[in-house]
Amino acid sequence: MGVLEKDSKRRTRNNNIQKIILQTVATAGFLSVALLAPNALQAFKQIGLLPKPRQKYIFNLSRNRLVKAGLLTYEDKFIRLTTKGEAKLRQLELYNYKLKKPKRWDKKWRVLIFDVPEKNRSIRDKVRNTIITIGFMRLQKSVWVYPYDCEDFVNLIKADFKIGKDLLYLIVDSIENDKEIRNHFQLSLP
Image 1: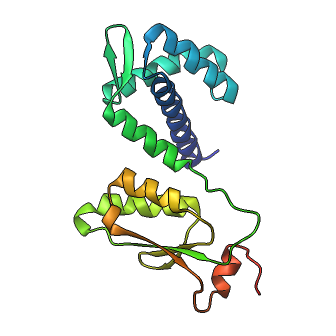
Image 2: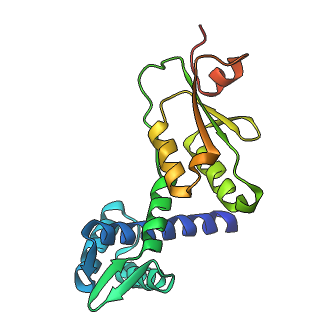
Image 3: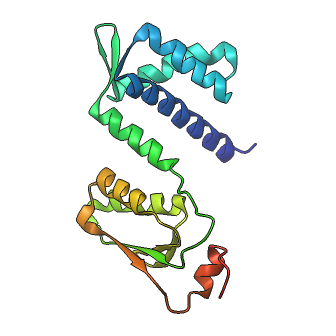
């Protein structure tokens, strides 16, 4: 395995660990430090994320990093999710978000047009990466198309990135010369 592959695998594992810890704390609102370890370690075991002897060590290391990063906070003997932690959890969940595809296509295109100002370039890049991850196809610079209902997903993006007025969602009956788009999404031609 090459250096890039190992690096990618490590980053993915770390994101999964963070997500499990944040979700565990978010589920209960707050958890005792003593209760948090067994619940999260059991989640690790279920997904086979870490070898058994190192689970507790890696879990504690990850939890301490999350506290240091300001995503979790200690309150007496309890751990609580901070607002920054809630935002990070939403981001991690959004990254793994999958849209449900219906059995039959309704022959309508969903078009996203976004115009995020240059001063918010990082948000623009995050929005672009998110819609690429979901599977949208790029038509033009900031114009993207998808064949299935994704309104809930778009509302989630608008709320999460706070770009409601900069992102426009359209439902279109037809797009000129859509053969390439249909091929991209493996939709049958009429």
